[in-house]
Amino acid sequence: MIDLRSDTVTKPTEAMRKAAYNAEVGDDVYVEDPTVNRLEELAAEKLGKEAALFVTSGTQGNQIAVLTHCKPSDEVIMESNAHVFLYEGAAMSALAGIQPRTIAGVRGAMNPEDVKAAIRPEDVHFPETGLICLENTHNKAGGAILPLENMEAIAKIAREHNIPVHLDGARLFNASVASGIPIHKFAEQTDTVQFCLSKGLGAPVGSILAGPKEFIDRARKWRKRLGGGLRQVGIVAAPGIIALNDMVDRLAEDHDHAKKLADSFANIDGIEIEGQVETNILLVNVKGLGVTSEEFIEKLKGEGILTVAFGPYTVRFVTNYDVTEDDIDTVINNVRKLV
Image (cartoon, rainbow, N blue to C red; front, top):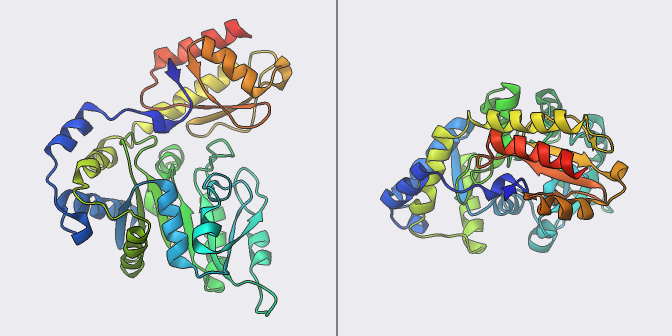
């Protein structure tokens, strides 16, 4: 099967497996695992942040950020299709006791003036705005890159109102590689950043939360409270070092593969490409074929292709390290045959 459901399905490389086997380990709850310490230092350096914390997943990283930034009853501003709003099980409400404030954006980008207008004034009737969340790349918008200028404008407004900004940068390295903008330029627009090691970068597990040292010290306690205090974690941190050192530049291959799919699918009657393909995510609308997304997915499965539904008629294709150019050609030919 050619698996285009997500870039989370990638298998660790041989180098990652060897690194895990040979990893020098210690007890990370005591901050004594040398391998995870190296990973955190490397991640912080790449992002231009003071410190970083290895966490089990992107969702855990985002939720630790909310718990550390906010107090119960705060309101958090986010784009209406943000991952933290749609796909994290209402964790910020369940765990942090906060209220989401959503703003409709364009390809994942909120209008800075809308963000400014959403910040609560001092009033006994209102919650306090405790945090602004951004997402780059934006999953629901088809891997769209949040423009640096948009982030800069929102960061300026946040600073004027003394409100922190958190970046869900699960696929931030995709944004950097595709745009040519250094990763730290995106990261410096926000107080804290989360990014995934286990998506396009190919590590088997884990994400990074980065920010000021004082913030990360408090975040470490929240990680412990959430059951994320791990022990000899160097075994899973070692592949993360390989991911950061060896797997970033190759993300361009995934982007090229997604664009090749889009260019080919655009010439098939009944298929419509939703939005612009900038990174490794492609959204395909199949309404013109007279089938739902679920029906189309089942037919694709019969052709040896795995994808996921992203709406009643929208199918998401995500290119990744384990999908070769030959696989892309096979997908194109099989979709043409199917249609």
